[in-house]
Image 1 (cartoon, rainbow, N blue to C red):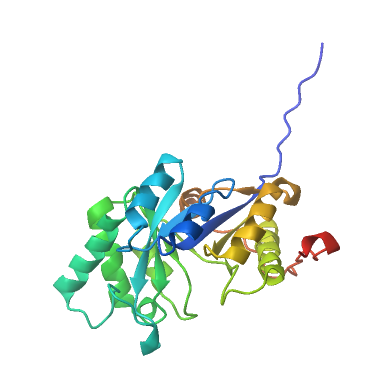
Image 2 (tube, rainbow, N blue to C red; image 1 turned 90 degrees about the horizontal axis):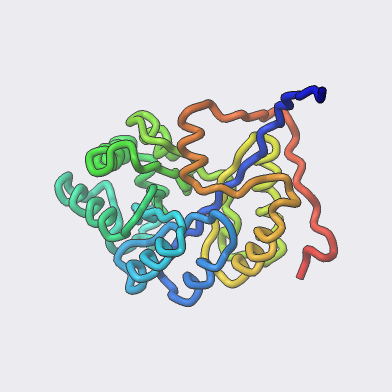
Length: 259
């Protein structure tokens, strides 16, 4: 008779990846939709291509988010249709509801810019109240962390929404492919250390070239690419497994990683 043994395997580390700014440039957004695996796409509202691309992404089985424009600290960074603290209560509500309704099939929300508004707890709780009123607990919220002092994730958690904070920007200021690859390896290292990690990138030529390569070999890193909703709702059920005392070991780039 053969003996049977139950082996408890260690849970595989997970990463999630958001592609922000979807809908601005049609061709780059279409290219982004060709990335392999469970990539999540966050669409800006009120662009010429947003609704057609969002419906296409949904038909392809992709997870969608609203990339909600919010007020930045620098006046020159202000945008049309952004949520700002100087908009009155009813107008603020109407604008955010219009943002939500402009993107079909969304599973969550994250902030576009918002370095000023995300520091305003009153404004952020107003946003979370509106999400709850419109969607109940169905949507998650991701704090893009465009400001160190952001309270967006705290506001979401306080209102019982599943929430996450961004861990790594892969391509801030549109860097070289080498730097984007280093940032991707940092995302992997954080996931291996902490159990999971969330990255944000954009539909840019250098970024898409790196991600096409890296995501095709994701299994070699011993991590799993999952949707943001899977990470957010799992994090809402348990405290994150963080080991800040451990050194973060980022894999070095080899000669074949640089092209």
